[in-house]
Image: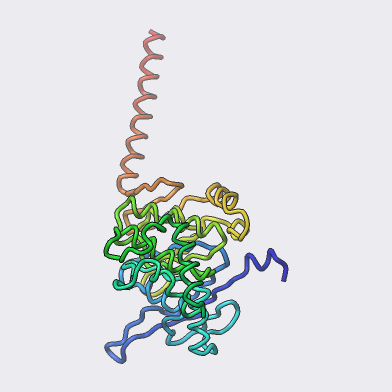
Length: 312
């Protein structure tokens, strides 16, 4: 396989995935015959109403949960045939998790929280702390590495959580509402950090309820009742980032983005283009269109009146 093909290869394949809970009359489906292919370097935003299966999907992709039926291929290997020990090792090395509630251990310092995933990778303590220190410096948190989580703001705690998810250099980042508990300024900082991470060639799959955040994505998926309702790519596969020159990659992605249209309901549509988010109401648009026609008619009428006056 050539390098270019490897850069654009499919790393996650979900085929007819179903996740069922309960039995008989109490039976319900979180996912139903769900199909999804994810290429290396994609930044996927998953949206949809509460209870549509977004978090269940992340848990299955992250090997934290198993589907009731269907096939999940990770890097071309069927996860059903992978032992629990190998799954845990893969999670520790290749998958980084970012949660809405931060999930920091309250009685551990910042640097100890960040170094925690390296325990499962077999690093000794000195090397763990050194790697944690390096990544905290990248997030401008080195001066707080011996603080306790309760001494940090919400935005700082989330940056610590992101640092923890990246300390083992994973290739896949799974984020479940990472900005859900943050104000707009902290959310912007977190999303810029994720953009930088993505520009380095990492694959990110993120769940969100905020349409404005789709400006950061290369692909937007809307889920409904455990299935994909809409799937929109805003960046061509050939333009996905690869390990190399992050700045050049970021510029290329931003310049290639196409507007994303999200149907909120039968009357409302959200259009995301660049850094702008607009909401369109179909009824209002119709009225605006009628107004434009009437103005045009009035303008033509005035021209006819002037012409008649000149003739007379």
